[in-house]
Image 1 (tube, rainbow over the protein chains, first blue to last red):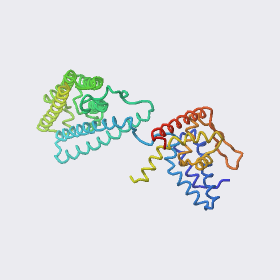
Image 2 (cartoon, rainbow over the protein chains, first blue to last red):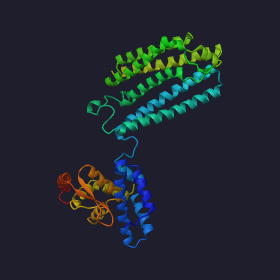
Image 3 (cartoon, chains in turn cyan, brown):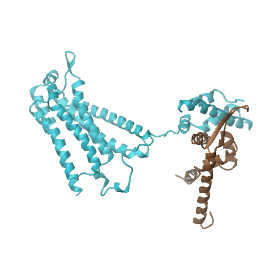
Image 4 (cartoon, chains in turn purple, yellow):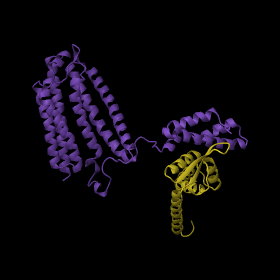
Amino acid sequence: MTTTGDLTTRYVRRAVDAVPEGRRADIGAELRSSIDDMVSERVASGEPPDAAERDVLNELGDPAILADRYSGRPAYLIGPRHYHVWRETLVRLLITVPPILALIVVAAGILDGDGFGATVGSAFETGVTTALHVAVWTTLAYAIIDRRRHTTLGQPWTIDRLPATTPTREITAGETVAGIALAIVTAGLLIGQHFLSGVTRDGERLPVLDPDLWSGWLPVLLAVLVGHAVFEIVKRRVGRWTLRLAIGNAVLDAAFAVPTIWLLVTDRLFNAAYLNAVGADATTIDRATTAVAVVIALVIVWDIGEAFVKALRRR
Amino acid sequence: MDWDDLLRTHLQELRRGTVVVASLAALRTPGYGYGLLQDLASAGITVDANTLYPLLRRLEDQGLLTSEWDTTQSRPRKMYRTSDAGERLLDALLRDLSGVHAALISLTGGTP
């Protein structure tokens, strides 16, 4: 005898919707029969059938949670195994990638001769949008890693990994992931400016950087970025900043910065057709190249200095 | 957190694994979800329906219970029974449980 009706049918469908397809019919039939049992019991002790059905379904609770229990799926996005490395990666990317892109927008704004307000506004917008992208994709990546049952990022913890001094001076997994991601983003920008430029002339996209550089410096810069990514892995293996790593870091940084700044100050980096199309005059181009060169130089000097300070402090 | 919440949380922690032991023991005689829930309740082991039903599935997946549909009654029911593997596990769990009990008696000086 079935004592339950439409409400139970909807509840059961909702609960089994989220369990693997092959098990739906069986779990649904069992759940239905269990609900019928529970309702019958209440009706037998004098409760009206409608009220009994509602009470039983309330007792079973949210069908989504019930489905989680049936399928044994974790009801969280990132579990304790990856929480710390996720947070570290996220923080590092958030404090590097959005500001860098915002700086690029500022430089572009100066080039285009936009007003101060408009430049700051679009730089802010770029920063916020980038931050959202960084947060979403980083979290998604770690959620997927966390759902692969037997993988844990990095080596299992042993006492050997206990930091000798403060943990902030050690190379963490998050720092490595962030460093590699930064190299990939920079390489993406170098390639993207050629194919995805927003400025067109006669229906053709105008690359931001001089296309002739593809047979010159651009492949070199991309190779240096690959070097940066490899360096992050080596640094991770070593586990802490050493003097040799700091020197390697300085060489790689210089290999990227010196050609870039040289191309900038000798007016060979940007595509002349692009600058014409955005209507930049000689003075703004001059100011923009100087600004970009100074920013690159400052970032590089900071990065090199920081590495040496960390290496020397460790001795 | 007031006293009642605190007590409830710790009792829940303490009893979490015992539902498995009780279910494996009770299902030596074949039974279905709601029937088992009532049997456990009258034996003094309270467990929520939305915890017990998925648990039976998990134990079945682990090969500790076997099941078959009984369609001879007015309402078709999925009947579970403790398997040989379930019997072996129950034996090990019961031995461990009495070991824990003995340890607690010794730690509390004979008056648990």
